Image 1 (spheres, rainbow, N blue to C red):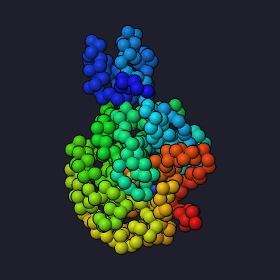
Image 2 (cartoon, helix red, strand yellow):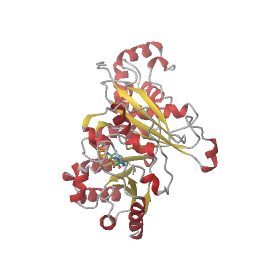
Image 3 (cartoon, rainbow, N blue to C red):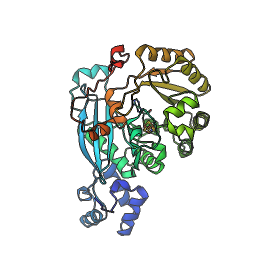
Length: 388
Ligand code: SAH
Ligand code: SF4
């Protein structure tokens, strides 16, 4: 528990090189180790069979094994997602979700609990808790417990990749959308991006990575300065600062004008369409005047809006918008020329992606049947109004 040694996933490529240099090993060994970690997903030096036995022993003395431990997993009823709750070495817990996207022609072959053939996206956490204070978010309701280390972040992704590899499948996309604010933990976020695009490992295109932020302006600039075409998703939830500050405490630090200016600069530098996420909360931010104001604010940005009806949390009385209201909000944006998706996110995606699995665990509720309804769009009104 108090082992001060790093895990191999805590170390970036140059740090692995330094450890090997200390052991008087030639530089090419770093590449061998890297490939074990990120191509074979093996982190036990003893299993790195192309290294000399002595080196395997020496490495095993310097580093520890995995720093995250799966505590629970839950499969979606339709077999299209699995979520994991992981315990960390200091007793904190975090969540990740692996989502599967299957060609409709292959849908008949889906067996819940098994990995289907298709595209696979992992959503992982960057912090235990979050300091940004979004009132509707289960992670926000915990406050910030701590930042995750590089290794704790990467291991969630490796865990998912290993799970897929056991069925001959590969990870296609990674979203920084689990617990926490990725741009408030920049060292880990940058480390994950650099690792995922490394050609000797995952070799992923930056276009397959999406960083979702509540709008940390200096963080958006840092991401831009990396110069990689990483997808940016910005969680807005309101089109005026007064309302946004009620819903998202950090809006008092980074307001809408500054956020949207940073988005424009990001787009000019990297040319990517930006996704704006908007959680629809009944009678709070779902008035059509907000839709019109949002459209106006997004003028000149190559944008896509994702509308997500609120997934209620135990810590807040807020309710999701009614379906008709949500649909009218979407139509208003579309009429203003903004491509919009009314995303009835899969229940599981929301429940695990926003700290709700952990929240439930702490209430002792995990294991009870909480329906993980997977909404297909368009959903029927009954699904949204399920708590009435
Ligand atoms: N901190 C980052 C990324 C993690 S949150 C961010 O805020 O963007 C990922 C997404 O889940 C955000 O768009 C967030 O607004 C949304 N979310 C949080 N709580 C939710 C809830 N109760 N229902 C629906 N979406 C929620
Ligand atoms: Fe943090 Fe994102 Fe939740 Fe807001 S929505 S509290 S930024 S994790």
